[in-house]
Image 1 (cartoon, one colour):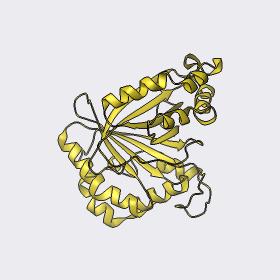
Image 2: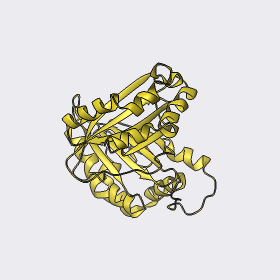
Image 3: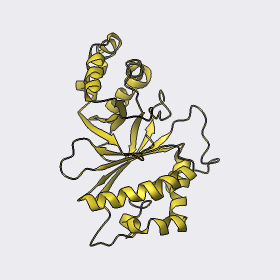
Length: 263
């Protein structure tokens, strides 16, 4: 069924095909060009669905992504799920053109379609997942490229800041890009993976970022240091940057990488 196709399960492919102009080689990007990320959340009913999705990602999708120039694909489970865990998948693209090329290649790859048939063609009576939530994010200017952390035991925090208006959302992004908030995170050792503005997806306007820690104790220590950091206090004390004006909701999800995650 079309809704379970890896490349057609969202409207992103159609939107991208409509808005993209003719561009140069899709996998090329200048050193300062902002990347794009697809953030997928698989809602699952049981462990059978989880295994089916994970087998497809590990054995079929990720190798295909890598062959097409995608450097990193992150796959994560929830640290404290309510029932069956959701799967979070982060895919790094060099550009919008790269995104379009990769999705088109997936659709036309007969070998991939055959190898992933159990997932792609799962019957209605036993679907591979319940639904997929998908967002397309554009990397922040001050951190235009994903930075994969060291490959060791670690946990991740995925944070989303929703704003009441587009203007407020842009102002919050300004804090990170222009006022040095990202630099505070890096200096304090949060090891950020990415910052992105959601350009297509739900709950807009919002920004999303991912940071990583050795464990929960390290997480608590880092956030305590952040709250007392002089530079952060200076930035947040500016009246126009008050959270009450710029942020209407903050969502934090603690994640653990799968054994085959590339992030």
